[in-house]
Length: 64
Image (cartoon, rainbow, N blue to C red; front, side):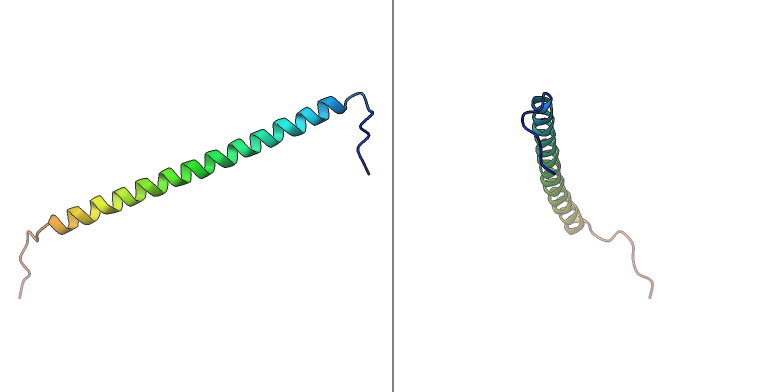
């Protein structure tokens, strides 16, 4: 089955395909950018946690 490019509605179909492609590319870009942002935030939080753990001293004595 092939598309009949001489049909009256061919412009509408091509525009719909183009809009769909743009939307899919936009959503893909948004997911990639959000993932990168989340990765950066996670690295930052892990560094802060490590810094706080290193600075923390034990506040209780271990019973013998």
